[in-house]
Image (tube, rainbow, N blue to C red; front, side, top):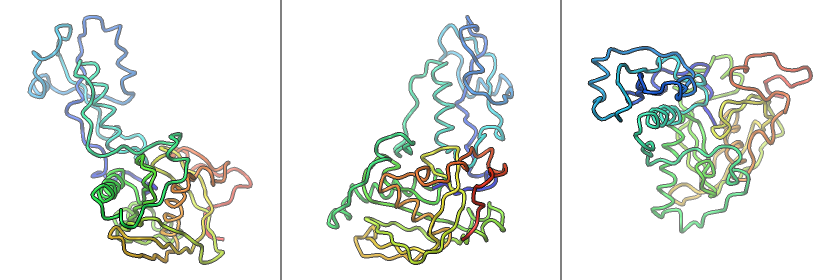
Length: 299
């Protein structure tokens, strides 16, 4: 589940990619559509700086290195709510590498977030034997999940979201994340910070009939949100990463995160439970709701 800021924090934006080099002055420029590489404003850097970053002699003969085009930092992330740093950097590097004949992009050691449509997101995950939890394999999966969640950034992640059909969820909501949202919004959501939670084989049950309607987003459904009705009070039991019994009594936004992540383990996405006519892009998030749609808030 994404952390849903109203604006993208500067330190969470993707870094300027120094290797995103586009050589201009190709022998047959008409065969390359520079616009299609990435539709964003560009700025020119001095040739001297470009030459320091990349040796012209290493380019294929058809290239004459005259300048380097680099995206403006403020325009690199048109969708700060969902787009990850890794996906942006991969996009820029891959496109520049293709043009310069540099081959495939170098892969990171962390798994990618699986996107909607992959079967692993639409099938129930399997339980883990308690004796297996302490194994090196399961511990690495948990470590990777925490790193991927924080890098996204998000407030929750389920193992199927990194392509692993196991019943593991991780969640964390920090004061820093909450600080990026309007106070009236976080108050209405009953959103409070909590430390990292790792729950293996979670079992969720509602503690009351109180529900709330709020917009949700998901790291596996990039760029969209919709209103989902969730219970306000839940209890989750399971095992810690040490294999010990754990119980979490949650309310408000934490309860919503737990329900969202536990749904992933059943092969359910928030779009399967959303109010259909509230589904929208992040850019249209502030547009009025259609007539008859429930307004965000508790019931």
